[in-house]
Length: 195
Picture 1 (tube, rainbow, N blue to C red):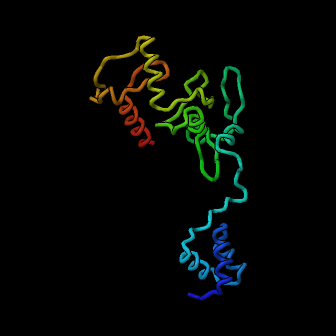
Picture 2 (tube, one colour; picture 1 turned 90 degrees about the vertical axis):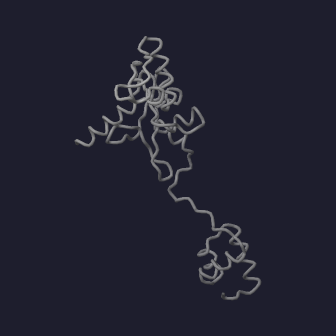
Picture 3 (cartoon, rainbow, N blue to C red; picture 1 turned 180 degrees about the vertical axis):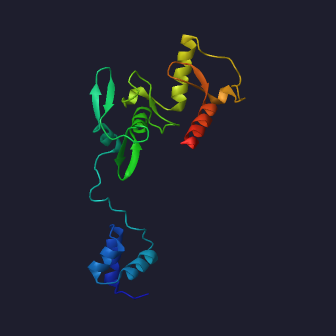
């Protein structure tokens, strides 16, 4: 290892502890970056924190989400941002990562990550992203099961026609009609395989 003068080592240690990269410290002290890296390791100083990209938004993810919404009568939030070409899912990019708008809305309302897909369970499911109107799969199943009980479409069958346990695989459509989630996914995959 190239030996540095004690005063240079002290300056290097201070710079590294203050967040300088090996390259920045090397330039300032007139040493090579490998020497700075070796001293960083021998001094037990961790890597410099990653600098944010110069064009990185200062908004939180929830704040950025809100920039793509417009309040609408009935407590709805209309999505005004980008949608995927495949199925029209509302999406946006925050810190170089794509997010679905409804998953961020769900997190804002429930303070946890969603399980499965997040959909709007209000009377405007195509465009609403209001945090109070979205549900993940367990919440959606619970709400739709309650609707099925009210409208009389609930069933006591223990298995679907293909033998899937309804306690595990039962789902409900928007009108409260039960169906087998596993059979539905298998049929969807079969349709996709044909295209």
